[in-house]
Image (cartoon, rainbow, N blue to C red):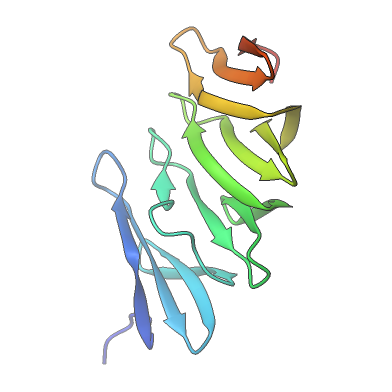
Length: 155
């Protein structure tokens, strides 16, 4: 008898950590989805935004965008849910794997969220967020008619 989880279906996302020692995917039973990490069933989720399942560079953390029935989404990091947004965009782990940043849409505004803290509302966020080698975070933000290069160091 096998000691592995059995599902009605599996998701399209299947990822390995950079060192190849860890693996994660999603499994489905009925309408309910689950994260499966290193062969163990983890967090129950409503659904996953395809292409978002990712390990941190050090392989210690796992994140994905959870698709909600009302078409909103939230970021799930290490099994913990963040706030709901109308849409999620670019997601990034810091090179050391300790920090997260992503873009989100709330109504007609775009946000950059760093460590679960919203860092301003903008008309657009055309680039980033990107963690730099010095540990800071950068992104471009636009509010008509201006374009801003924003650097975040305090997170």
